[in-house]
Length: 113
Length: 115
Image (cartoon, rainbow over all chains, first blue to last red; front, side):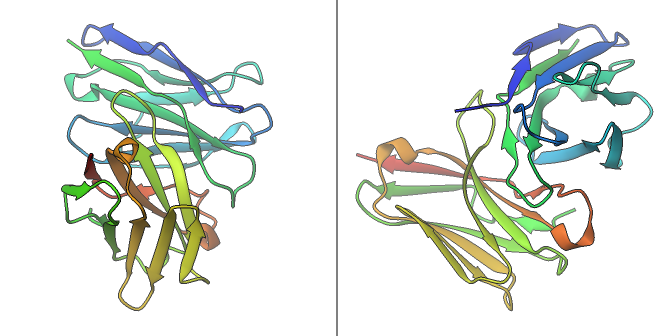
């Protein structure tokens, strides 16, 4: 069964450093999402991406964040200058069509020291 | 922001009995609701969904009920099995609004099914 994959599973970085989290969505999917879950809190929407542009973003998704689909298979989330409060699980999700169900990847645990 | 709320952080049920997980929402624009199951160190796994035009959807042991007037939905698992022990998240989206199908999640309910 096709699945969303994410790398790395765990990323440790120093505050102020740039990180790139990678996702490979399901191959025929067209809509892509990033969510995050801070330990003990809700899963929160960050951004949605369709047709090579951001379709919606939350207030969390400020200028420090960016997304890209560099090569037609990968979907990346970049945090330009990490802060301690960026420590969280980051989940990628994808769907084939806008009315379909979102399927999630296993997540990347980001730890900012 | 408490647009989707799961008021019970945990639920313990005996194997073979029914598990009922509840979820309330406040945003009238929500028209599609989903339940996800999550194990530690894994991503949410889709279980079952319901559109606002329905009041019930069933898939095997899982049934979701939607009460639009009360802005309430519930997930019933019958019979409950030890393998069902996980955190269950309720999620909602406003698909008609063209908002890109972003999901708003509840805080989760940890279900423990005892053998």
